[in-house]
Length: 161
Image (cartoon, rainbow, N blue to C red; front, side, top):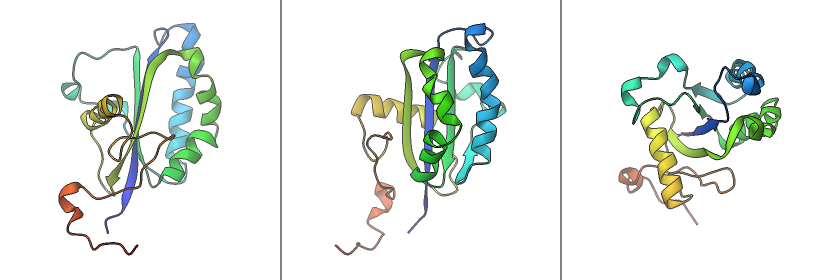
């Protein structure tokens, strides 16, 4: 069976422009959190600013919207980074920096080696917001096991009960 990795996308709206002193601690921590992720067990990939192709965005870029997207070897690895590292201190302060209700997080499984596009992440966020959690788009609160794409499921042997 194909190995799977966990992709995540997080989108949030800042309370103030990046230059505003009220979000200075957040801005100062971005590079630290990225470096922490890059060196965390199970980390595979993350979207970097220089990799964002403006032409793939669904509309004009909103400087108040911050997005992250990454791929991890497993749900456990991502969970450890988010909740059991210095990242947790920043997570606890999210209400200081971001508009309440202006955030979205989505998780989904990808085949190992697949790097999701920004458009793919945005589609998963939309799917989660319109259909709720399911195997194609879910959250930490309601997770799903990886499974092959529908067009390949019949090619796999049945698992014993």
